[in-house]
Length: 494
Image 1 (cartoon, rainbow, N blue to C red):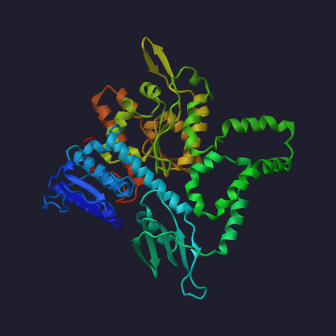
Image 2 (cartoon, one colour):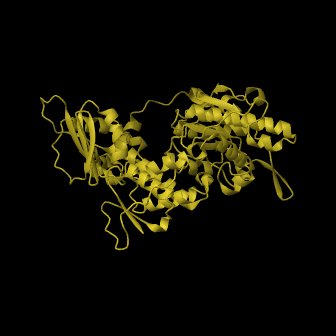
Image 3 (cartoon, one colour):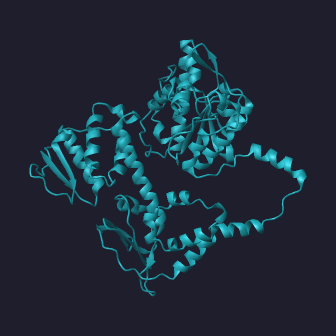
């Protein structure tokens, strides 16, 4: 039995090197007791590493996930990562299995850590502690993160505040940046920081940008959880601002300009019907889509199917509409066409979990034929009605590139759904000037009966997915990216 206590500083590197040694020596997960520096010793374990074994290789997507998930506060994080790594050595494709419970747990841990990093970037409040005549200004902040995110987030503060000295003190690990050098220390108790003259200016600004007419307390607390308020000087004014919001909103309404002439009502109605103005909180968008009754398609479909994926994805994949399986499950791209997309995406190293996947039309349009439901192509009016939701998804995700698969997606995004075979592989302009890469829909491949034509279409779709991966990922930084070699001349890629 091996017992490993990992340090609180440099944890990611220490776990990676230790896990590599255990994996090379073929040490099973149940033979290792993982812990951190604060864990109590185990009576039946030893602290030794196994003898060196042969080289090991794991998918880059796992390495990227582990580099983040290892900072989670779960005391079982090291054991969970190694247990999944042990399974991964015999099943490399496990990283793409969205039904695997262990992978889902690790992905959630990864998401929680990234969210904690985001909150740290937003809610750290510095106070000046240096002398007025010092060569470099000096600041300090006290922060209480939910996870061990100080070390992986410190580089953000180095880039942003490189011209001054600062320290971020936490109960776990503290980051110290002095004279251009970054270092880490064990945790501190909460210091008694001095008052900062700049706080009054910041609080004045904070109060003046508050819009009482758009107050949504639950949404605000979701983005700014109460646990962080005690260390944020502006939070002391939030209760009063909430209490005064109704009276201020009424005053704003009374001071609003008069209504436009009656003849403008028709013009305004036309503009409203074509504009996507949904602006609710991000977490409410899927619920709003599922409740959609904007067109008659909702009368027969089981449910509307919203998009799925990271809220800040660089790549958005837009298909036509949900199919039979998607309509029943409520998730996009899980039917035959979605499975073919997954296979071809895996071949070129495009990580679907890193992309936001959605459809131009959110309800399944079909014709009953016995016990089967036969797909029907959406009409222009139905595409236009659903453009409301697609615009809202694009506005929230703000992708670097949109991949439009098929004529319906092309029509919704570019206004033109014709001649897809001649336009595929080209970049066109989409909403708000965003680049749209046109390609074939995987269902088109499923309908081709001629083997040679089907292989040619598959090679074209594969080429477009490879282009999309290259446009959205910096060189050498693609999560789960593999080297995709072009097929020999005359041979279609598979």
